[in-house]
Image (cartoon, rainbow, N blue to C red; front, side):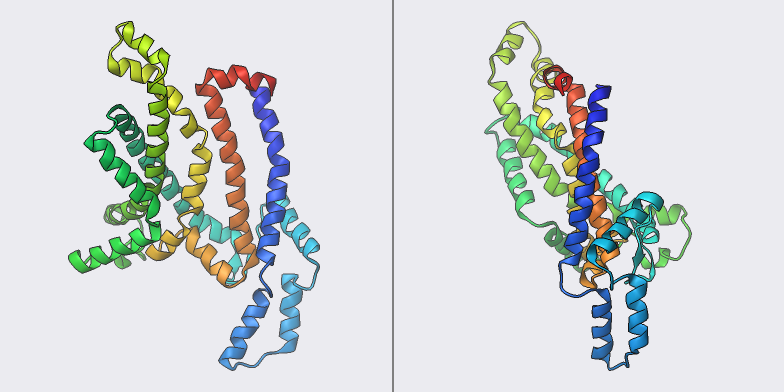
Length: 333
């Protein structure tokens, strides 16, 4: 098991390197750069442009160098000093932005993941056991609804209903009067009152997907001979379910733990923008619009690294819970 983990970690190194190259290429694809956008805004406003200042900014940001040199300098600073560069849009180091935003982003993503699985697993088991019942039809319909309706649309509906019917603004994670106050019990309660909205909206899509996957896998397992043998030995129905088909049916979900966490982290960007959350999503949106390459590159690189780390976590968790994987594949890996 230890040797397998070491090999998987070693495989991650070239993967992360390729991801960093692709991330830098992606943020360089749009024509122009941040300085070009900045100068265009100055020209549109009628402000005078000092050519000496333009040349100074070009040298300071390294925009006069080849892209390969810019990449090597960027990735070198990240590896040696964990320095993601300077944000042109926010006029501060990217590290400061990440520290102020990533914590909240991870917290909401993990909480959405817990809520999603906490709801989806028991529902998925129940609807599989009660196939073609009213509950099965109801949750299947809700599952299609959760998959079909975009999260940002749900966010807009929730905001409209909350304001029009109850007179309560649900944008952000705190009411305006608490933003400048230190953390106390009143602000914590206000934070919790705002937190449930983005968590539920982000969890809906993941919950619907998990229910459909678990239901399909459970139905397949319930029809296999070993389940009938277990019932014939006198085990209770709950004992049969929890001992045999449920652990096997959870395997496809465990194998996607890492992907779900990444989806909650990056897939809610539009929801975060709509709800005006102090998270990484609005920062990335502003960086992409303004061609702030270092900020956008840092976000894309972190998301890519999360994919590789999530895949590693999924593989290890699956090997721990499923002996077939552990003995059939891991020893020969």
